[in-house]
Length: 565
Image 1 (cartoon, helix red, strand yellow):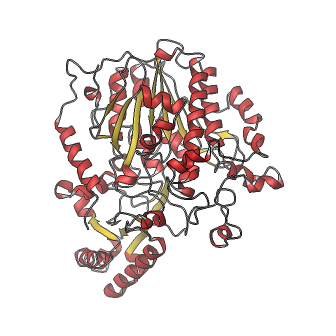
Image 2 (cartoon, rainbow, N blue to C red):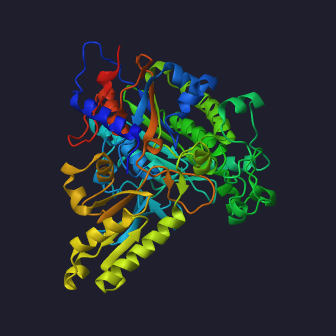
Image 3 (cartoon, rainbow, N blue to C red):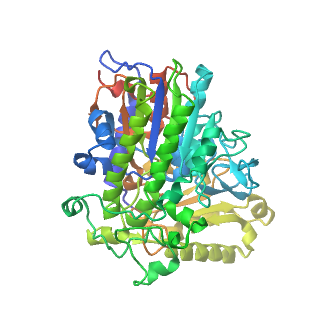
């Protein structure tokens, strides 16, 4: 299957970048050490979005696009383009597979069970008897850890709408990590990080900010001409998911399906409830209160108010949910861009009340991109499809066919997850079943499907010297001890979801890999850099700016040499 020309071009440019040393030329940037690094991730903020909306920004995002070093062609250099892997790589400088995290949820062949990327069986949600989370199971470290190793007084805090985003970006030694609890509306943490909530966190939660929106509607803020200029689908586009209700009925019943503005939290009509707080996470207001809490943390913890650099990490999760439901060409995407433009301006103003602007290094990026709605792509002549149901049918039939050929039970496989196949080596050896014969059959059957691009075996991924460019991306998401024995990769523009509406991400193609990367402040000269860079290059670049020493075994490298004075 022919891969995207964008993917080939991107990987070719990466080879050029890799061949260049990271030593600074006489004209490369020499920024001052910031007192505060503010690292902001907009979840699923595809790389073309700030380019497309740049001329419409008026506030916070305008400040970024006008005053930043902007790497316009940054990519996520791995196949599993998901939130957990994306946030882990952003500040670790390493491929997520090598750190033992293969996806948000994945079958771990070593443990022989499905695990969650941020799980910690030894931690609880603080104050509750519910499972917590931490960085405990990560095989590596993050920028915040390097900062603390170099200067023990450095403080590291992280906040997000999602636990995995807050945890996996923060590192092992973070001082505070908080995330939105979707059934209570509070920001919580785990016993891994602390034994008691600070008073200001308690006060923030006691304010119950989500409850203040119970009678609010998310409405359009711009004239009709704006949406006509920047959107590609009608406001009531049939294939968008309903932000207000999100039940199965709304996907199939046109009388219940309401994908257009204004949006409200339907559960709010019956008062505050678990459903209301969950619905709150589907509105941009979640990102507003996430930024509000981040500013509160910065103030109360006095981040950036001494000569030791601190790190504040903020991940905005509502954007991801809105993108999933409505796609990047929608009226909702256009409106949330304007909404975030305002929210970020308010956030930066709050920070700069206590820390001079010249002492702050702002970084703005994304964990992954996302695919446009398949039906929209079809209208544009692109061969796009929803393959979730078809993928399940194929997976089940393939498993049955293999078991029939081998005349054995389903104990031959430890797991079939999505398109990842886990072989039971012990069972196969005991029953004299040859893996090589099964390998040939899997390839033969998989590649008959026009929506499958490639199959990679454990043996190929373990010795990746002969892998093609797509295989290398898969290898970056794979792990020798934990990974599958076969990884089957869908072809471009094939979305593996059984949902009849909405869209998502997760594929090793440019639309899912392309992300923004902007850096602003501490003497960095605004400029646009069109050379290919990777998100694994962000952490080593920041380490060079901060003059901290990263581990020797990073997969990324500093690209500060590309930045001109």
